[in-house]
Amino acid sequence: MENAGWPRRVGALFVDWMIAWATTLLITGASYGDAPDEMPFWLPIFVFWVEVTLVTSLLGMSIGKRLFGIRVAGYDGQPIGPAGAAIRTALLCLVVPALLVTDRQRGLHDVAAKSIVVKA
Image (cartoon, rainbow, N blue to C red):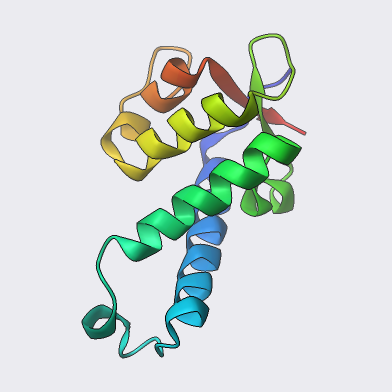
């Protein structure tokens, strides 16, 4: 398994975040310009968490990761499952754990979920 580089990971995160924002706007009926005033600040983060957790636990990758040719796997190469995906995504939503990386370029959210992001 070859580790995925940071450019792919950041690109995938950007795509997933834009999908979460679009989904939030559809759910609330708000327009992009009105969004900050008409919805709670936590709603897009919650939508991101639900979306990425569900798709990652079912397919081993989010929509953004699929587009960038990467996936999330456990140490054994298998999908991380619902609990691992929920932990990983929750810590990703906090941002800081994802920015703190080990010497093997794994974010603390991956360490906590016992996962690794690899090329698909």
